[in-house]
Amino acid sequence: MVMFRRMLGDVLRDLRLQRGMTLREVSAEARVSLGYISEIERGQKEASSELLASLCAALDAPLSDVLRDVADLVALEEAAAGLTRLPVAAPAGTVVTSAA
Image (cartoon, rainbow, N blue to C red; front, side, top):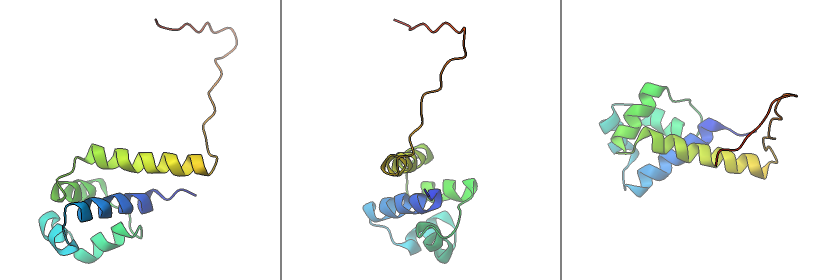
């Protein structure tokens, strides 16, 4: 099973390390307890949207980039597990055209 919170934690940790920041620095900048950030990075706690926005601001990373990175990791894990989405067939009688 794909664990979104684990992958989110991996992305946040990687960003923090790429920026050369300690948990203490991110904690001070985001105004979130060091222990809570550590739990988020380890995938043990869920981050609210407000908390995630604070962490992204502290890491100087757009929220959309963080979520895109997590989505890419989820897609890779789903593909590895054989969880691919099949195309949905159009209802009978529907005319499908392609835009050129």
